[in-house]
Each structure stands twice: as C-alpha cells, then as structure tokens.
Image (cartoon, one colour):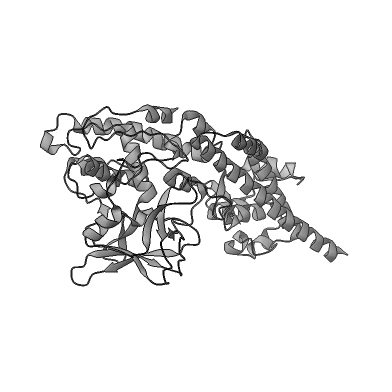
Length: 475
C-alpha cells in the first residue's frame, strides 16, 4: 500500500530542528515534538495575548483525546477566554520564494499542505518566533495516511479508501516535487535550512494543519466578502471538538491598525473542570478521521455515499418486490427530471448520500419518486423541491412512497453486504485488544454500518405507517 511507504519514510538528521516524523498512528495521545516544551500559556501572555486566569492545559479524562484546555474554576458566560494579537497566528503569505512556488503546485482541496510548508519551514528554523508553539505540537497524528496498509483496508469503506490513497499518492508525488525544487539551491535560499524533506515530514505538516488550523476571514474583497485565510492559532487550537460547544471563536478588527484580533469567548457558563470545546463543523466521520484523526459515535452528520446507478436501482427495487422498475430505461419526461437533478446529462453528479440531517439526499428521493411514478401529469404538478423533501409526505401517493422507501431499504442491504465483517464481529475484535490505528478503523466502519441500519429502521417505520394509512383509506 502507498501509505505503508509513508509510514516507514524517515530522516536521520542531527539538526536540533530536524524534520523527522515518527509517523506512527495511535489512538493513545502522542508525545510533544520535544520532551519538555515551553509553557504555551506563558508564551501567549508574553507576546501580548490574553489568557483567562482560569484557563489551564490539562490531560482530558478520555486519554485518547490527550491534552486540552479546561476551566480551573467557574467561568461566567460571555467571558473572554483567549485573545491573540495579529502577530501570533501562523499563516502563509504568497511571495516569489521557493516555498510559495511549491505551495502553488498544491491542489486547493489539500490547502493544509500549503500552510504545512510554512509550518515545516518554521520548524526547521533555529530561533523561530513560533518555536514555543511548534514544540508543543504532537510528534505523530492518528490519521489514516499514517495507518499501516492493513488498517487502511480495515476501514472497509470505498469512498474513504479512495481519499486516503489519493492523499498518500499526492504526498509521494509532492515529495519528488519538493526534492527537485530544493536541489542545487544556495544555503541562503533553502526554505528548510538545507534539510531534505520527505513524504513523512510533509504528511506530518499537512496533518498538523488539517487537524488544528482554522479558516478565518482575511482581507475584504471588492464584492464585500472576505477571503478565507487558513491560520494556526496557538493555544486556541487546543480546544477540543463538541457539537454542543461552550466556546466560540470571534474575529475583531482593531480600528487603529486594521489588524485581525482572534478571540475565544465563553458561550455558556463553564463549570470548574469542564473542558473548553469548540464546534469544528457539522462534518461526517470521513472528514473527522481524515483531517482530525478521530471518529464520533452516533454522529448526526455522518452519511454514506452511493453512486446513482440505474441498473443497481433496478436490482434493489426488484429485490424489494417492486414489479417492472425502469430506472435503467427511464421515459423521456423522466430523463428530463433526472437532468434537472444533475443525475443525467453531459456532466452528471452521480454521488448521492444516505444519513445525516436529510436521511435521504433530496436528489435521490426525487429521482426515485419520479421514476416509480407512471403518471407524468401527477409528477409535473409538484416542483422539484417538493419531490426532494422527505417532509413532503407521499406527494405522489402512498404506493409510490412505499415503493421508493422499499427501494432505499434494499439499497441499504446491498451497502451493508459490501462490508466484509458484521458489527458483532467488530465488537469482538475490539474486546480482544488491538492497536490504536486498528481500533480507529474498526470504530469508523462500525459507525457506517450503524448508520445504514438506522436509515433502514427509520424508513421501515415510515413504510409501516404509510401502509396502515393506506389500509385505513381503503377500508
């Protein structure tokens, strides 16, 4: 596997800012870059920042989370917790340097690598202003690009496997790109102080940024909006995640010099010993694992990806007992609806999802309702938004709705069949004791399977309810 090459890649340098990376994924909290890093709170205060007297760095109750910020005493709602002046956040500004030229070759979807290059540069620089911060960063990250090949396969979920392998391939290719750019440079022009950079150290930097950086408002553009600027926010990035946060990040503008000031403010009363938590975003478990290295149980925003495929839908609906499905051979008026849903045409977007707040992605639901309907006029009485809405109960009739739901339930059965193990098998493996990366992989696939089962249960309840209504209406 590509990832295993990244795991074994390392440097053997004696420079005290060496860019080596242990690159060993673990659920246990890793060591800092140096055994006894500087006190981060003292550094922020020394540099003109503010840290509330009750904010402390402490080991979290869940050891897999590691260090975080906690309240040493009750903190009132609305209190400023941390404030960073403009010079403390670490960001990347493009210029005509070698580093900027390398950053321009990074695809936008991997924006963390751009700032990661700056992070590596500062890590290599003796006397860097940010060294007190960088030295407090973890030595390793528990994200899938650092999993052994076997544990990447243990994820058992094709869309995530694709993303992991894509990132691994990028890092290996970018490794060659960086080496080529650095060869024959004069020492003064070398962005990393003469050190070589490999895929492992690049992966460490990208992981550090993806798991800790915030995309904040930068300069105001001509249209009145702001561009997004990824920034690493020392100390603030030690707030862990919760969908029910007790803190929020606030950006302020200093009227005197127009410099951005970043603050964390208490959204609620924070009790003694409570962790300070922010909402990293309403993300699915794919992104949490890829970028942050953890999985959230019963994540309300988790979903599974499916490919919209007419033949697959025909098979699913027939398995559900629906006669004469025509997903693979829609009528012209049905094709027109599919085109409007971007499921047909020159550049269709065939990726659809189940789960999350919608339960069934609107485009998929609308397609099923339309293609299982035989009466064009009845379908055309409704706009697309109605057909896409799960809350619009049975807009094309109870029989149509039941057929659509049964087709989705059959799709779920097919999706479950793609996982080589069952949930009870996974639970048994976890009880046996496994490595940190294996545990994360198993937790991830268990949550995907649980999500599919939850969708099936929800839709089964809806089918029973609709069926009973249909029977009552006939009676």
